[in-house]
Image (cartoon, rainbow, N blue to C red; front, side, top):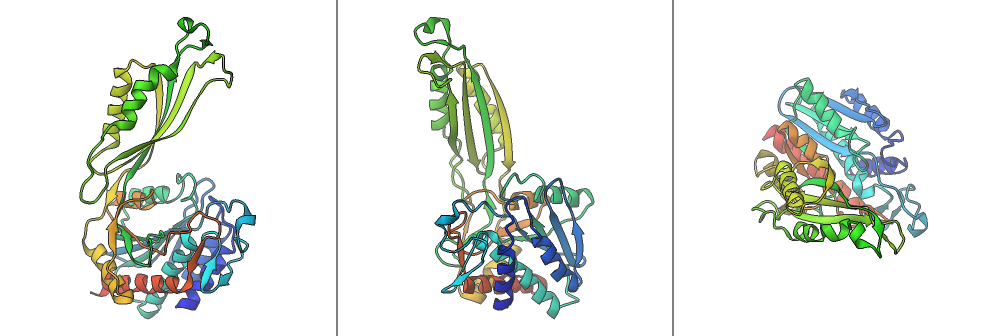
Length: 377
């Protein structure tokens, strides 16, 4: 299994699939799966290519979800080895996407292949949901596939997302949920004027100062047993013409909240609107909801994965919900149990991104054992 996984991971890394480009990765995958009897369905939306592949029929539907797109390389002079060469040095596979997430994608594919070869008449359905729009806008990828599947009454029972969840050693962390993410783009209006004549102008920065103080110090909730408290961070702030003698006419503030299941996006919007009105600020605000929070409580999927980790590498993972968002937030809308497990995340989105090849092999064994645990036990 190891050689097969590493070979496929290298083949995928060598395709420079900067989001949302796929560069033939999904075609390579589909050709492999089709030979084993998987039903291949292409779901292209705008400039994003999506693949939905299934083997078997009926319940449960076990899906492996992943993405072929990667973030840009940055300055390639900062890399020890060319980012799309997929070079292996001292058991480390280097390349953009090695750990996020072409390595674990290869492990999931090979695990599914090996299981189907050994069990061509297996129970239920084994599926793969692969997109090329996870690292960019995430508007025409998994979310559109999920909408399509739901519209025609298809469901997913259990979903493994191959994001790099491990922190210090393989298998120490499994994500069983994620916080919600909502961004506010706020424009506070004033009246532009000369700094020497402030009585003829209205400085939106001065007017907004008490509001910003309350916005950044407000305690939204205390979190719960699964999630840390909701947090808010100002990401961008801008005003003025660049001149030191002009009072600005508008203040732009961009902020983001990562919120837990104690909070909703409607409550957040309502509270911030109340704050703005409290200070009498003339404003307009644009909201962008990236995803609602989701949680998979300990149950059949979590147990199957934890048992697999114990069986293959002798580790009991810690369940966490921290970090950024993932496509799991869309799949959870189907009512599916969703978990995320993959290799170490120490080098993701960095120069010299890399993954241990032995860890990739173990990931494949764990994914395979998870199928055994879900379909045969």
